[in-house]
Image 1 (cartoon, helix red, strand yellow):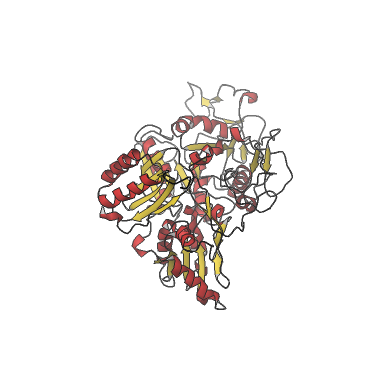
Image 2 (cartoon, rainbow, N blue to C red):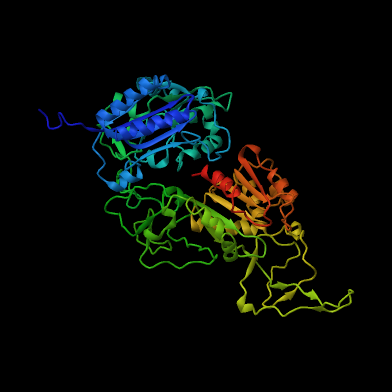
Length: 608
């Protein structure tokens, strides 16, 4: 009798099913009851369009779960249940990060998020590419291998870069396309930018278990003529390796999203390399991550340093490196912290401006939002004005504040004496406060007649405050754009940009150029607060496709600085399918009370 005979082994179960779920609440109750009763741990994602599940537990319990599903609902008929035996999680850190220390059951909008424009309609899953079994997929590659040009066949990997580092398909005479995306939601943009490489070809797609190819293949086919011949590996790499245990045309290891981390074949070749020393290495168990974008990186045991921070190859291509200096929220450069190291492909240890791992706010999974202040403000004052908003969003968002590049002179307004009745009366005022008590003020855009100089003393305003002065402040965009490119380069990636008043106008200008700025300023959304559109060429590029949240006062909203109509006109420039509008009655501020804060959280929640 073997040592394992009679012992209930541990296992992992993966499955997904796209189907109409008529009663989502009933299915939610079933999963809570069944998984808890069977002591299953892992992730369950439910939507009106289907289920996506990865759970672990005793093998007999997983088998009971499958039987209960089949008996409960015919919707699971034909589901590909991928059940594998394995060791129990031994590394608590890996188990926790992979979600195998608890049971998480959630209702979601999408089982997988294809696009970084989450407000846009997803493609019809019924239009997905035709399924090929593992043997059919293998035969397609084998037949192409025997022809000089592969008969117009291309292989498309639908996975993330950190997965393709350690394993991928390779067949001679077949063009293989690796999009090298950080996350699946970036894949649709890559398809848009590289559609000519797919048009007129027979596209063979593959991913880990199959679910990502369902949506991605439907997206490719939705492009119409020339994109009809799209096929996908049914059951993904996992089913292929079961059919071809020697690896077949798949080289390396299959990255999996559970505590196993990766699964290999009998082929012992190592495809991955250490980020630091470039020696062969493919073990992600240390969970090293890029300090900028948080993507997993491969760092061998000899090169690992507990105090070190790493820069992935994609961030290196964007100019982020160990030489970068970190801008703190006052807009000033921060000096390196002694003893902290930041490592990329160079093996030389270098002092880093980044914080030690324990203090790095980017280690938490929050949205990083760059905040642009209004005219004649600064990063510090805007941070104070938005402290209530930051507090309400602290669990899902981190705000980063920077000063605009155009420094402004100190100006104060005079007042008429009480008995002054005509224009010839003298202008009287209290003396301005000492300059040492005043913080510098900045702007993103300035008037055309601005000479760029700043006086060391106070200046008397040339006339009364003009509430429409923002319409004349149209210069200085190029300088501000260059300044923000440096911020992105030095501070790492941002999920979104929030702008207030003139800062909102600046954010709108940037969002209108989102495609042109890719690689230098990558972001997913903008939040436009009390915004207005400037009559400049950058805003004349047609409908703006960037996902956007517009927050402004309604017609009775008491915003005496930016008219309701001006904010409405700016919002109208954005695609209706990816914009949200919140009108409030709170004046020239960003509201933080209900129901407004709930709508803000709802918008941001789509990007988590």
